[in-house]
Image 1 (tube, rainbow, N blue to C red):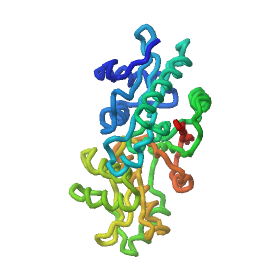
Image 2: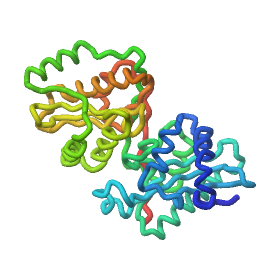
Image 3: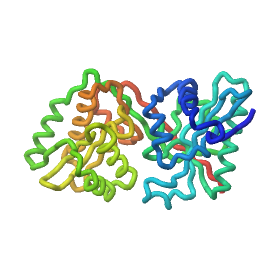
Image 4: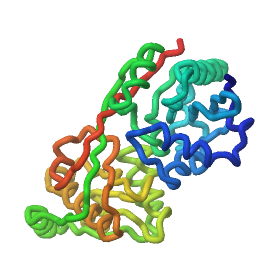
Length: 313
């Protein structure tokens, strides 16, 4: 068995890795858009940090690693001592999959030590991630990582929602009327305002949501963002189909405008647009706001993730 980098394996063979992930990750369906988003579309992506395990030239394991070197610029210094494993997968049918997993981890960790990293985190690489942590359904990987010294440092969930019969409830229409009586209006985002809106988001919610807001304005044919406004003042925003066409979020409301139902209206307006786009099973990723999202009808799956960290020093 040998472990090589993607640079040596061949960047032109990325499709092999994409298909391999779908063969090995039985809780996930990684489409071409999502795979591209976490690899070549990520400005931080480095083929030298993706490791491939081969047995007789057959692919039996993959580790996609990353360090934050380019975007968002505001977070580079904060994360200069941190590395991430975006995804780790080994062939469940390979007789020596334990060895493959151990070698992939060891190779990545040693490289990160030489680069001065002090910690390795699993999966929660904001803005360009496959999942926000390790799904507890992947028990094999969880046990292996815990035995290697990873510890739980956080947790979150994804909601998966079936939009086939989606409708905006009457109570939300009433909230909308209440907001309108307070001169709060809701509208779709338009091109030309993305810099001003993303600046507003950055000032209140940080660099990651800023960059995801810019994605919502630019990634699709038309901006996929709703705004709550009082006059020219932005009070809240809600993105959808930004990181992935079937993903909702981020969403946020200015502290001074909370408790008015603005977030609920933005949520349902965004989900309605996803349904009108023809999306059916959509994902609300990386959240701990359980009650806010449980108001959405027809939640069909909840995924529970642990965020894991390995201290290198």
